[in-house]
Length: 329
Length: 261
Image (cartoon, rainbow over all chains, first blue to last red; front, side, top):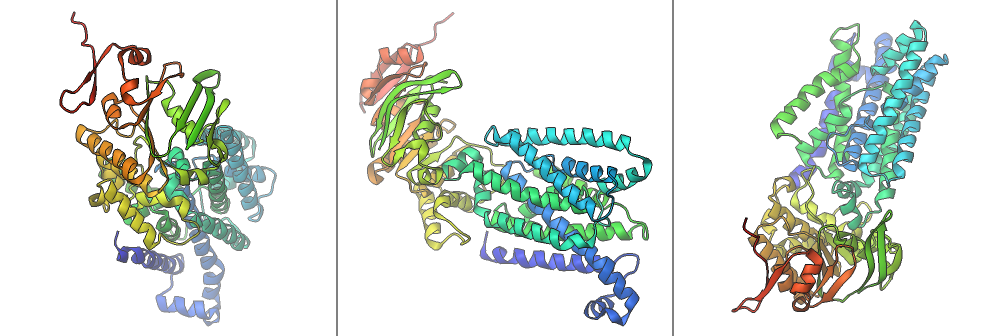
């Protein structure tokens, strides 16, 4: 890898994100021209109605999309390195099931406000991770045990979830299913600063351990011989990535494919070294979800399709293309 | 260098190694041999503190091996593993730089001096031409030399190899054997290797540790004293002829021919 690619990846990612943010802000039920957008951003009073649309609806939503996208992409990159499995996905370790169960429990208890739902989802996700970790710790958190424990905790959560869905009346059921499918319209903007704070701290923590992540891709045995305390390292990364997924899931439900595909694409473009992979995944993940959300909002406007449908529609064919062209991973 | 005293080790209830006594001397090339499952790799792990013996002790100058901490141990021992699949396509240079992990703390990039060590290690294993390639596209022999370069980049006084050349062809085996001997003689590295290649071990080792199938020590001595009919029968249950090559004087071990039916 030569020097110029060392620098150019960052500017490329940043340009990509800027374009995506512009697209996300400009498109929707009401669309803005670039000049209009700039005017409204600088001074909302030029057109109070459209200013309100931009500042109170569009902007929080685009920021939420970039927050969720970058959290999912970074946590995906971490899980793939720690589990030594390029097919690992942020939801593999039962986090999704836990978050869903937490949120649906809250719905059952009547706490359906946009303020309660994310918090209960967050707690559910962390609880599931904690359970997985307790089981895996008994075996020094070997990758196979982690994956199996994650799948089991996920199944358990799904079973309880299905039971709850069967029990609750039709009205809360709709809101639960809508939340599960993954969408960016549910969360209260009040959570945005808190989510950003958690995500920023966890992402920076992960990035600062870029060498550790590189070494862990060599397997626990080799990493230990290179001087890593593997148990402690896994614990740290696991907690950081867990907080990232929990944040994303609690704010936007189960948005698929971002955490799986984005780290992959970044690796293909700029190599597997985590000093680049983590920030590039964060920027590209944000851009990907902002664009997907803009598409989800505008195709059947004014109705919107769940953003998870769009990410899967873009992500799955792309992934199949990768599988075919690289002859497996 | 490493002192092993009356050490026994068990996985669960199954004893793998029994009352092993061993002194690894500085600057020697010691080969651990024995039948499959007799505990060779386990012994290598015990030597570097990855496992804790149930009885006896493994001592380095700083203390018991398993108490030294991974960070400290990585400065004393570098390990060449058996080949693993490479799920991520790291460039060779970055792969070798991983050997410098314990020396790089904080957020700084790899320094100029560190890159220099990486290049030197690649040159030592005759792998400089691979530096810009990707690890996932190397052949077995090339990858093994890269892994050896990574271990050298660690700049530890002790080098451990666990059947590191078993999958290589004759040419690569010979070049790695030559490199190991050179590291011992010129750089005063202490090398402990596990190997199944009797002939090569006889040629390059100062001493051979032969383990019995039940994990007891059969012999620990110079190759020409260890490799004889009786001892090899005890270790492998096979009848062999031990011959000296008429020209070079090298020891050669021939298993007796299979019976015709």
